[in-house]
Amino acid sequence: MIKLLVRNERGVSSIVGLLMMVGITLIMSTVVLAIALSFQLPVPAPMASIFATPEYSTPGVLDISITHKGGNGLVAGDWWMSVVPAGSRAIYKQSSTNFTVGDEINTRIVTGGTGDYTVTRSLITTNGIAAPISGGSYDVSIIVQQYEIMHVTVVVNG
Image 1 (cartoon, rainbow, N blue to C red):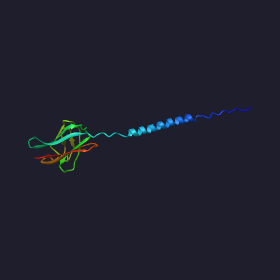
Image 2: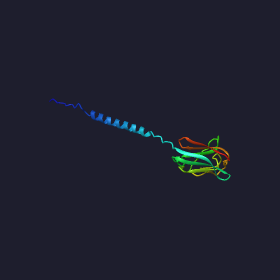
Image 3: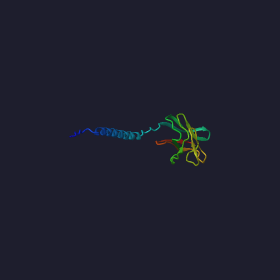
Image 4: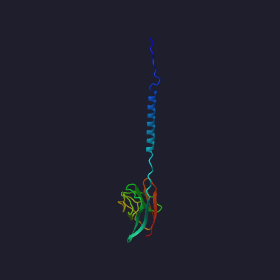
């Protein structure tokens, strides 16, 4: 008796090949997506118009008035301010409030003294010793986290 053996030449290789192609495509698309999501778009720096001027509102007392005239607001905790005599090293004190259009900070002291400072949208205060503002020039600097310094020189004649 002769047995006829029928051979199936197709086998399962086409199914395996298809599954491998789908698997490779899924893995590659996952890798590309992961790489694309790892790039963060840079957040634009805030743009603000901030002016510092000498104030003589109280007789015999000099203030520096720092006014937010326009642009983006500065978020509490993300901005630091320094008010020091011109040419001195800036000493930054962190803010505790937002600084938005129309806000005005008035200070009679510089931030280069001792003690703990509080910088708000209306005042700079310290529980330590700070030199009062007198005649001369002062450097007023605001730095916003991760961005550039906004710098103003204020001349106070007193």
